Length: 128
Image (cartoon, rainbow, N blue to C red; front, side, top):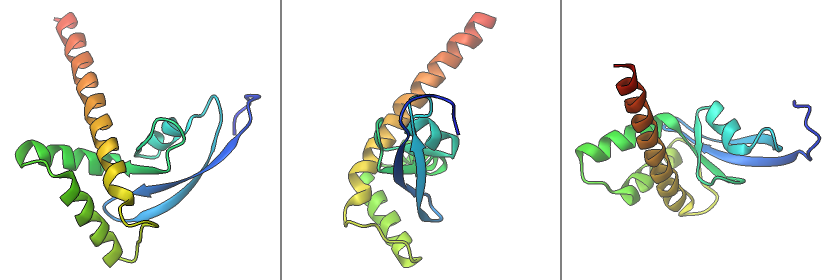
């Protein structure tokens, strides 16, 4: 709970990890935006405002590393994860729910990691 005076908006987000697909209900307000709450739970939102889907940070790290070593194919990865989760009893509401949103989350995650690496490099250089 928070003490801000802004209206709390309920939001249901589908969270995807290698192990499972689950719905997470959060209350969004000015001081607790959805992306912040999702990152604190270990998920990266597929949209910066009111995301409907979020991908686990572990999965994004795995795919980012894989795509450095192999030809990037986001469509194949999304299809594979969708089939894997379906085989384990987890189904998306729509057929291509993961593909476009996963691509968005992955590209935003990779940009963020590049910015973090750049800032860390500056801090290390300044400390020398």
